[in-house]
Amino acid sequence: MKYVIAIIGLLVVLGLALLASNNKKQVRYRPIILMIVIQIILAALLLNTEFGLIFIKWIANIFVKLLDYAQQGISFVFGGIANKGESPFFLNVLLPIVFISVLIGIFQYLRILPLIMRGIGFVLSKVNGMGKLESYNAVASLMVGQSEVFITVKKQLSHLPAHRLYTLCASAMSTVSMSIVGAYMTMIQPKYVVTALILNLFGGFIISSIINPYRVDSKEDILEIQEEEKQSFFEMLGEYILDGFKVAIIVGAMLIGFVALMAAINNVFSLFFGISFQQILGYIFSPFAFLMGIPGSEMVKAGGIMATKLVTNEFVAMIDLTKIQASFSPRSLGIISVFLVSFANFSSIGIIAGAVKGLSEKQGNTVARFGLKLLYGATLVSVLSAIIVSFVL
Image (cartoon, rainbow, N blue to C red):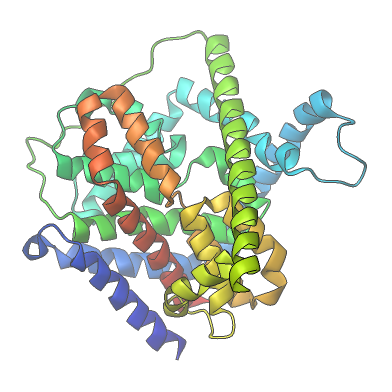
């Protein structure tokens, strides 16, 4: 039965993408089918095999070690602030972002990261039937983040037509930055974080190639990567340390605002209607939870978590999930966890449009105009990844 629901869910997601397509006749189905098959194989490999277990354990151990190193710096500065036995979210989840940001900076400085991004992007371009620029951008979004990625392609940004710009922005919203992957792993199981990262990479191309189909002329398919200004090693360290700290502060501030706002709205709705706002959203999103393979008894709670992620952000949703995870079956928990690992939320529209506008005002305005369509597509990517996982769990 789970396979029937998953197939129906898959068809619904592809149908919803087709509904919003710019040009239904131009959609190329062969690369889409190929990428869906690759997604299912990779999900099965990562979640159901000994190799997958070893690989994910290796990735998880790296991040555990990195978080341990980060804690040494945090303890030096903030030691004694937390009571013994307590685990403050800001100290243990957000501040390690600073150290991971530094590592990304070092790999960028040594030109290792650009080499990896170009290599994987080139291989992806052979599979997805899209341009080298789009393929590179998807990998770069995963490595350096949804706003920083546009700096690396700023030479071409102002010359891109709207349809190619959409694909670049869709990739940025569908993936997550490596700098905060460690933070996710403190809240949900690492195997689902790693699986979601890989599935979203392909899912972004699948949904974009339906909503926004086009062909790139080989003469136009030129990848020009903007090299960062040459800095000394310690200048670079200082910049990435501050960037990491800014991200931690911004995420912390957004959590304070969104969690407080959600609590206030829930209280008002409970007072006047006898049901919380999240419960109402849960009912609205429950059909999608069902299509993702969540059983009927759990789909309203799952829908509430999904809606929370959309209207606030993935951190707020993950915090809520940790509070009620005991009420979900292991399979449902895995499906929801995969859904949550992406930047598909309303605030990301502003972040991406702002990042592009900082480099090209005209293109920033273009992004703002298709912002809701961008969010629609990125949300379908999250649902698609969750459905693919439902096949193998």
